[in-house]
Image (cartoon, rainbow, N blue to C red; front, side, top):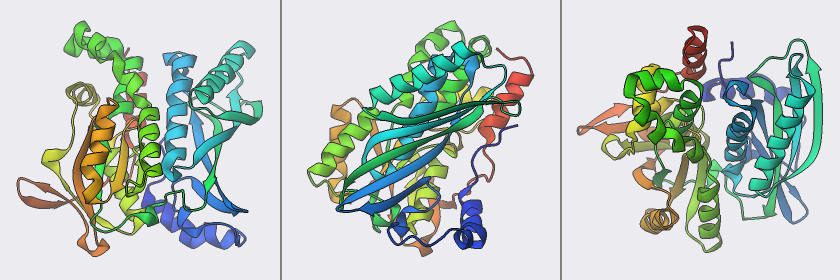
Length: 351
């Protein structure tokens, strides 16, 4: 049973006690880029190169083309945190024995189509079959990005008092996957009209528009200090992870958290909190407060909803949310509950 990524605390523990002692020193590596965010950066002459490796997961029951597109959005979202230009990717697939040649070809073609959408080439591929491989975890994708020195971001760039902007709303990816996998179950609860009105959630898993806007703003000097892809630990979990990587505390206002009734309704059927479940499709942006309104306006002008929900603080402040005027420490679940709920619904025969 797939249980998701390690939480940030576990990653830090592994890094401190094991990984760091095993890996050789690398003078070219930028140390502030190796923080459990899947990406490392190093200098090559006057350029910076980022390497991002992401597990490749595929749920073929929703259709291979849709499943690959969905998974590649996760790949590109994770690779976007440096804001260097994604150039090439390498593909490693370990396919189950029951994945025939036609399905394998469709997977590769769909990967190529998603890469083309983002303007990324495919530098290498390796495809094998293994009796021990099974969906959804069938390999990994490595993305190579590059750019000028000084033209990249890391969590270490984030400053105290930076505003926290989030795009769209929590639980996008979880809702999209559940809707694609269990439409009849959702229809029984909320009606066929609800299902039809919610289908466009799947398209919102992409952050291509946000990346384009943020990249353009950075070229014009917008005081953007950090970006982060909302992923398997959800919006609040991802803000927590970003703060941990940045060495900062934060304060958010619960009353300002964006919400989407469709996502809330879908997540509720499966016992998921949209704030702490798959949130790919939403981006976190850290910027100077003076530029907050300009950044939100630029995103809105490109039909991307964006909201300022709080700010970063000194680490000693802690990680808290304000609810009805009361400070509440934000506690992130150590386990990722989406896949547990997903496979539980699958095993119970939901459709």
